[in-house]
Image (cartoon, rainbow, N blue to C red; front, side, top):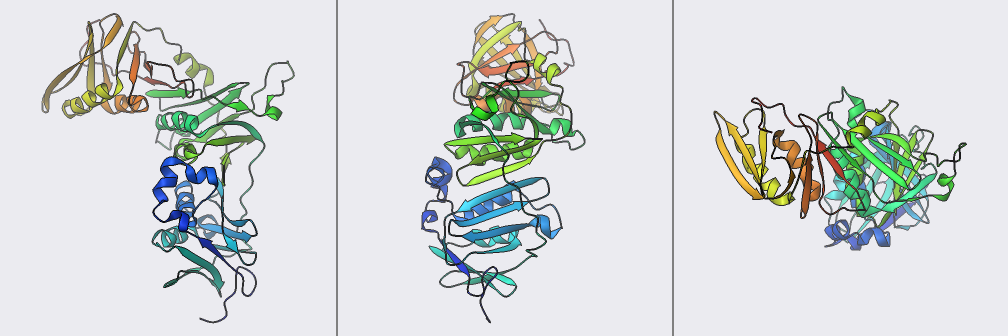
Length: 416
């Protein structure tokens, strides 16, 4: 195979013990034990890095991953020009070095292996991945031309991973998928003193949350008027926020970073960041929508309502319209279409206020109900076509999630 050399010098190589992953990949993901102990398998790190930074560009500099080995272990770092990420992996390093390879090739190669131990070393223009019985060689990319990802800006606050997941996931799901409207494809994050808020909308629904957090001491300084200044004021792509809800949400605790239009999230072993979108968000108008004036309030089991909506959706027709009818101690879920047929299902519910009828898109109802799985949900229905507010029947101080859904304009006027 010729002379073996590590990242920059002859004989350099490092090995990483994967015994923590044998029979335990899912354990770290489900229970968070891997985060608490800081044990991150190389294959898992490469796979999660690829999820955060899917390869969309043909430019080698934006498709690669930099592996840096030193006495502290191995760091994988990458950037696609918009988002950057760094992950530290424990490893036994025999000599310091650096190498750049395709992050997709690295993730796919490591993901196929099930060996208790692997060894990486540079051999000529290849990075060799070796097990006791196999060798895989990845072409090296230009190390000198590779753009180094930045480090996180200053810390502005800390919150639990569970609260972050409960808030960020549902909020990100309410953002638009239409790239032509970048303003509505992002999650708005703001802080003011002890309050942190997340908000996103696609104009037909809106989700907002106020997870519990602890503001960093340096960020808590008062502004020139003596009032607390906003330490976090960014607009972050919803797709990134959703993936961070899945990955960082497994950590016990995580840190928010922000400065000069830059944002980052860090948790043990990981740091991920991006730049805030440079567009103005209609904060005042959207905050006003959250001040509801209900004509009727109904409390119902979220799982039972979601199941009924799912069944009615088969009869919802091309509009996907499902009707909710409020009655004394009950909520009727209807679907109706001339070609599909009709359905009607009655659920037990607590009603306060008028007996109203509203139509909604079934998929928006299901998205609104999903965060409240396993518990009662409260619907606050407003007049005419003003949005309906979904909240937990029992307040959750960890997330304080509120979800708005705009009713459909009915084909016939509903009974009020």
